[in-house]
Amino acid sequence: MTKPGSSAGKRKALRYGAGFAVLLAASLFVGASLGAERLSIFSLSDTESAILFGIRFPRVLLGACVGASLAVAGAGLQALLRNPLAEPYLLGVSNGAALGTMLAIILFGSFEFARPVLAFGGAALATFAVYQIARSKAGMNAERLILSGVIITTLLSSVIILLTSLLDATRLRSFTFWLLGDLSQATMTGFWVCFAAAVAGTLILSTQAKALNLMMVGERDALDFGVEVGRTRLAVFAASAGLVGVAVSASGSVGFVGLIVPHLIRLFAGSDNRFVIPFSALFGASFVVLADTFARTLIAPRELPVGAITALIGCPLFIWLLRKN
Amino acid sequence: MLEVEGIKAGYGGRAVLDGISFSVQDGSITAVLGANGAGKTTLIRLLNRSLDPFEGDVVLEGRPLADLSRRQIARSVAVVAQENETNFPVSVLEFVLAGRFAHGSAFGWESERDIAAAETAMELCELEGMGHRLMNELSGGERQRVLLARALATEAGTLLLDEPTANLDLSHQAMMFRLVRERTKGCGGSAVVITHDLNLASEFADQILLLKEGKIAACGSPEEVLTADLIADLFEVEVLLDRNPRTGNVRITTLF
Image 1: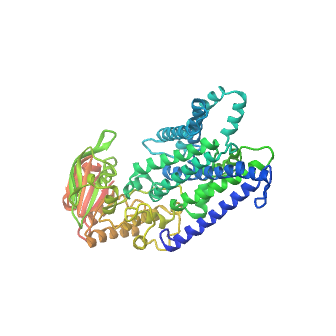
Image 2 (image 1 turned 180 degrees about the horizontal axis):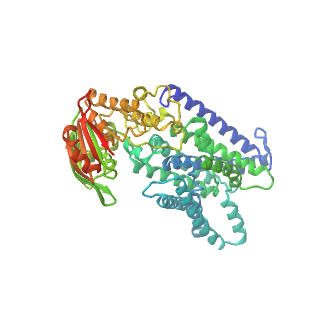
Image 3 (image 1 turned 30 degrees about the vertical axis):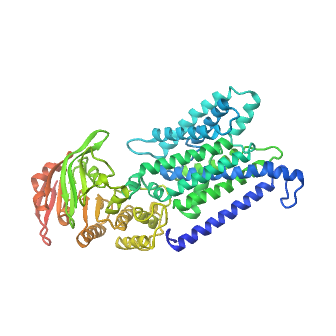
């Protein structure tokens, strides 16, 4: 086996990192090439060029940032809450962000930057609520956490449904589609905001990776071996809420990415969060780009919500993990 | 030296311990005995400030723990907690290396020095060749040895052990106490051990602290503390006391 701090461990990190970076580059290429209109990227007509730069690039780049953000948030929350089933969508964090985004749309209309801010607020409040409900004197087990997530998700869904009933028919359809995860409204501004959040969130969580290796086996263990638990918890919750908030405000609730991606990474690279967090970012980005490409091409020219594709992959995995635990 | 001065502590405003004062000398082992719920684990938690007292201080080498950061405390005081389980596939080596968190950077990779400390600790705990095994595939006894290895890997001067022999067979119980004794006598460190095994305490401890309902019932050498009256008062059982024919230490036999 490779030792985490040894030169062999660092070589392993570089090898996997390079592999996931190549996969991401290939995914972006495939995502930009395929769609209702198949493009040959190296010989473009004017129309194809407009499609590539005006529509495809913003969409695949935003998809990559959304995937990276959700996967990294999932990896961080799972380690912090010592629960491999913790996932932004299942914990209601995504719904908190969706409600925040919806309020921004209703209250601030066209002011685009209000959406990520209120989405972050909604995600942070939902995270806090689930954590408080799931905690007990006896600690926090998987069932309690998931049930708390279900309660908060149900509550927030009800409020979202109440608010959507206020929308007119056209906005209702587009909003419902968005809620299921939709990258079709991607803009370069949206991409840059999401990119900044993804990079900042991944960096913050990476600084906590070593502490999370101890948190993952127990909060008491972490305290005993020198982790400032309160500070780590705050950093991880805030970074996760930021990542999920900005991703959801740009693309709706793309579910299960935070469950599937870190789990697959752990199968390949082990549980050390210094590997899991950055590799989740790279692989999560590839995963959503490919899932969205599939969603765009399966019944082209019509599109499926990307969230439906990720849920179709994520649900069986969730059931398997639940039974395994 | 670790000094506990007038501690009152508990949870949610309810005091579990009250009026606790004692000191642990360098090079010594202190055994903490008491019935279930007497406050033993709470006491251990106070000794590395994973729980803050309502009143009083814990002073390590002349400095109150409240003045030290968590990393400073972790470099000086290591804990072997009661067994824990993780839902993640963590290898034995990763688990032991995590004990080196307080050394070096909080963000980077372990140094060769960290890896050497972890490997030495694993050898001492008879875990050679098990570095790649996953924690959730180990037996209770093997996990307990990994917990000890993680504490030894810290190279901290003070060890706190919460029922460390609960899942261990006889030979590994002896190994555990031999290692703790070597660490305390050989390196000038100290250890505080919670145990329910009065005979082990008699053989290995320099000082015994008897806790009853959150207060100190007695504190002193095994000879002074392990008396039939005190044991009967604490555990509500009748015991027979004699001497271990080999070591001459007090030997306790419960009468059923």
